[in-house]
Image (cartoon, rainbow over all chains, first blue to last red; front, top):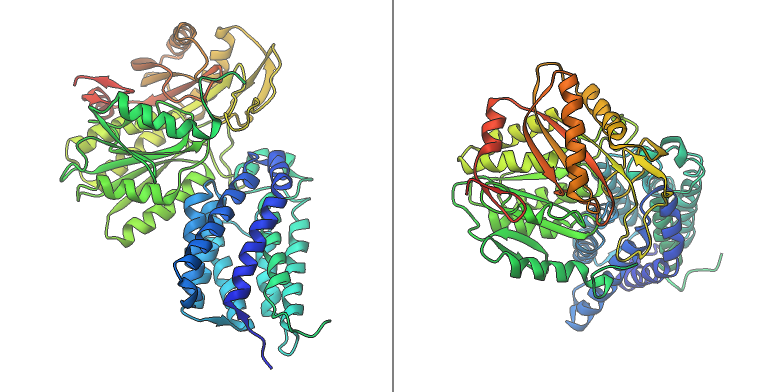
Amino acid sequence: MSETISRQSILVWLRTFAETVTRKRDELIDLDAAIGDADHGINMDRGMQAVVRKLAELDEAGDETSDDLGALFKTVGMTLVSTVGGAAGPLYGTLFLQMGVAVGDRSELTLTDWATALAAGVTGVRARGKAELEDKTMLDALLPAAEALNASDSGIPLADILRRSAAAAEQGMKATIPLVARKGRASYLGARSVGHQDPGATSSWLLLNTAAETLAPAERCAS
Amino acid sequence: MKKLINRPEDVVKEELAGVALAHADRLRVHTAPNFIVRVDAPVKGKVAIVSGGGSGHEPMHGGFVGMGMLDAACPGEVFTSPTPDQMLEATKAVNGEAGVLHIVKNYTGDVMNFEMAAELAQAEGIAVEQVVIDDDVAVKDSLYTAGRRGVGTTVLAEKICGAAAEQGRPLAEVAGLCRRVNANGRSMGIALTSCTVPMAGKPTFELGDDEIEIGVGIHGEPGRERRPSAPAHDIVETLATAIVDDLPFKRGAAILAFVNGMGGTPLMELYVVFNELHRFLEGRGISITRNLVGSYMTSLDMAGCAITLLRLDDELTALWDAPVNTPGLRWGA
């Protein structure tokens, strides 16, 4: 039996991520204050609240009937691009826009679709930010998470694979602590950026961790 | 925090409303998304110039919209990059079918948002060129950082390119001129005090009563070092030495010297700085043939100044002298 990710699960994921960002707002602000300009929590919260409002509008407009997931991801991306600002706006916006392009008009996603979409999104982020692994950016969480999906064997429950992907993101996030920042405002600090966890990698881990908590069908076998 | 504001979250909105009322003869202010255009936009057959950045640096950029300078400016939240939807709508509003130049200051957020805007505009068939200004010598330019920040040279580039566009020069030439201004301009600033972002409600950084920050950024980013306060003579020598040695500006060069106030420093002190700068450059055999003294690229209520030097040639000088009519800069028109 091949498990799939439904539109409903994706909506739950996005709303859960928004709630998580609100809850972790101050934590993200503090991480950013140490090596950046202390606005990451504020900007991500503003952006995800806008996404939640946009999803509610779509629901009210009866858009529930449209199950084009590519269009949904693109709407999320454009909303983030126009409300987050700073560097996170274009980066998270690009992630969702490219995921949208990759999934096309599918109404549900297989694991392969999800892996392809995330890989496309991460490639977009990499091109937009011109960052590489170990530059101490969100890419340090996103890239291992996308790779963990590709390395998965078939036959493993979707929930387990998503958890493995989130765990890879968490490991990547923690690995930013000893790194010297080479991109963004933190890069001006040089060696002084060592010892701090990257706020962008942290919000990216939250995104993938909430994906692991919400995207797998509820009726999966407990593991 | 004492400020002449109502609610912190309304500052940008209310500022834009004030700008619209004060300068209705020259500017039109659009909201949702926010951007400012010159009143006669789009000017048919003329290259349009669009800039933008976080609010809190007034008169940059909105105050430089008008004949002979910018066609549009996109204000973001305080010290936060504007977003691509603003830039796209501004670009469409000023496109006179001769192409659009985006002048972008080198900050990660600004660069990425403008890149997305350019892609969206190009997808709609508008020819867009972008030039990134990165003139702050306080920051090391290296593969391992986001590169030098864009500061005072931006104002000079906007004036000079605006004049060239007004003469009917094509997009590639106006963009080339902008790169030339960037290549010949260098800046560095110092802070006597921090600044306070309205939404934050407290100073961005801590600076002792007797301390100054050498090489401060326009958002209060840390500079090269923190020192005990010193006479203007010593401060100017530190800034000017770093700037002159970086390009380098050589004996016999003709330059435009720009002494910029950070927002909280009186013009009286800026003239004291200009006097010191004049003396310093004279000693190096560099002659100031044009100058600009005043608060044109501010950092809210920060006290301090920045010096920008631009190496001139006859063409750049003529473009600098050309008529301009904006709320922030006006001569000859």
